[in-house]
Image (tube, rainbow, N blue to C red):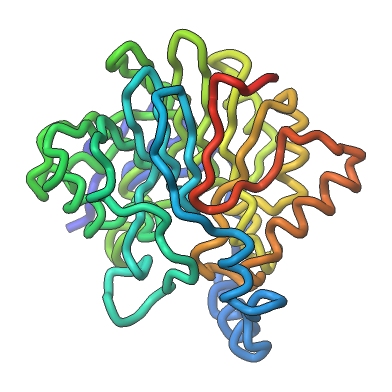
Length: 333
């Protein structure tokens, strides 16, 4: 029996009878996955960081310190960020497990430690999920959150609510692209991204993927989620108004011929940043898991080179150390 999308709306381009689709076409062709795997294996990719994993961690990692009461952002590695806004604590795509995988003995392994553990948080009010890939939605981490903070509110894209309720999570809001939800004097809006979803061999694109616009009285933040570059992405991010802060991916882009449909490279990230009006931007989706062919230290190196090539020397697009924080109240656009 063929699965039919219970949320199908023929008036919405991204809805299909059997799931969801992107606003722009997928550039991948049949056989590309096998070609990439063969090339990756033949070349022994990815290579370790230039000075080794220990030196990379020494340079790009620190223990997260949760001091103060100001509005603040902590980058916790990959796509996980902790936001403190109006005294509320929010997490994006929390993954604290050793592997981004359905298995504990196989799959992409964490190369840098977690800078924070769930039991070190004294408060957690909301979690924003961009999509269901294992490096963005981690069952073990979600269970830890639900156990320690049972009143946490989860915000998820269309088609993912059931995954959470089956795990006993009580507060889940599921949104389609451009739907908004007002919560604790903030507004969360799910916005389009160029990506895909899949958690097993049987559920490809049956749940949606998204980015999130987070708005308070004095802040507008765009968490892009996992996305490739598209010509309309800046317009999507700015539709709710000018951004104060953006979190934009710069990793898992190599080889570009294969990854560009769904992942952004540093050069595209810089171009997008310029199109957004150069808000303060934290580069994400790098530094933890080896998901593509580039070494762990290549994304920041290429970002610095891309900024230089673009004639940009601004301090508004600078990689943070994993675990590092910045006060949102001092961000200037």
